Image (tube, rainbow, N blue to C red; front, side, top):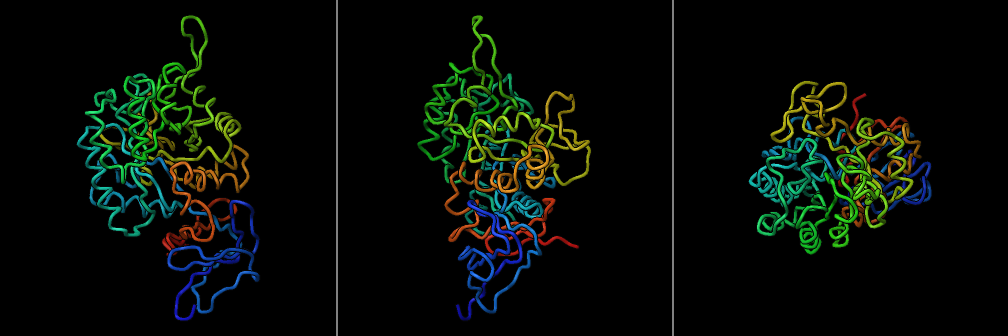
Length: 397
């Protein structure tokens, strides 16, 4: 240990997957957690940098696997500073890594997003919260459940169309699609073969229409209850719609936009009751206006109005994403859903990491994992954000 600089985070309650450690300590070196435990039991290297948690919670960094932008930066209309702008904003709100979401747009826009993400991620620069990859939300979505997605770009999944996107499987980590569309089963099979998560969303299907694609490997439900069909009659018989199908199938994990507007607490609790906190994560689905004043904004090519804490289409027919942040989702999980602190934090850290397959290095405070750490007070206000062992954000008193 001589001559090497260590980071010690102490004097707080450490949240681990198994327990809460009061008077806990986390020891970090070279961007990794090398030890964790109770103060006085864990050996603390001399001449280390000390971060005093001041009786706050020492939590895993928050992970958002569905977010469209921030501070005017828009994944769908990516520019050279998009991911840097987003990363710095997210760090202020306790988020240490994320999937950038591009909504339905022209093919050239999707390709530009994927190419830019590849260039950005290959640099290995820690520029605020870490970009883990891209989530394509579209273009293979239902017209009847399109929400804020521009219908003119929606299409059926055909191999000669979607193969161009799969060439970016090093950065394309998740794709949302409507399982009932003709060709979806083959798309899901091809996604799975490339190691890309297939998620069901913006779907108007019923069980019999969706099950082929689900059997091919759909594993996740995008913003549960939002833009999904519910049970209806098929030749007089009442049958499961998309919501009931995805709820019923144990192979499907789910995500909740926990901004307090999209979904009521009863529905959020229903999803957790059916699937458990280890299969349900919080997401923001935040659009580019998050962090900006109310008014007229855009997400991709779509006009949106931000007012009273929500983002909506001008005709008031649908939400246009949200203007929330991950620590608000955690707070709502505790205050609106009645979750424990540890369960709410799990749904914002380890569960999303497991869903997208990065839990070998992220999502929990364990030896050998990335030192992505959020320090937050009893009211879920962010005090400090540490990313890969570096203090990236400190709240100004």
